[in-house]
Image 1 (cartoon, rainbow, N blue to C red):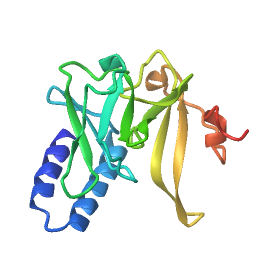
Image 2 (image 1 turned 180 degrees about the horizontal axis):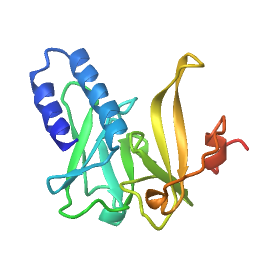
Image 3 (image 1 turned 45 degrees about the vertical axis):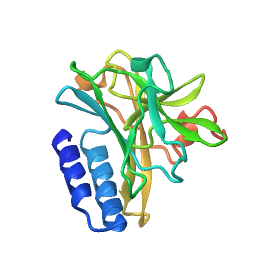
Image 4 (image 1 turned 90 degrees about the vertical axis):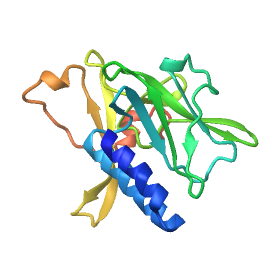
Length: 190
């Protein structure tokens, strides 16, 4: 996925229009989401990318366990033509189970949001957080955007509960529930 990121940056430089750039960025985001998920770890870095709508007027920072939750330490780079943001944070070790959020700076103040493209996530007293990598000693949630629901003729976001130690389990029972966000999100309707 790191090589895909570098290829995307080159492709954005050579793109002939904002529409072309947006299409390239969307294909990249979805491709990484389904391969290993964000953030990308590799070549001594942790890479986070986003394409928010609406575009925050004051930019985006990444904040989390790795930065002491300080909101102004890790500003994301932005493409000059489209609201595509990215940040490569030095990280020489193995992927770590950092909690993090994207801090959207708006004229009315900061808006802390989970990374919409992070595959792994959870909830705490501050709401939803993104998880950089799974912790094998703890359960977490995973999401898959634009999952093709062929029987329904549309796409859905599929959410999974992953129990601690699932990587070592050979037979993992599964239970499918419709309306999964009400199962996991403590702020959901019921």
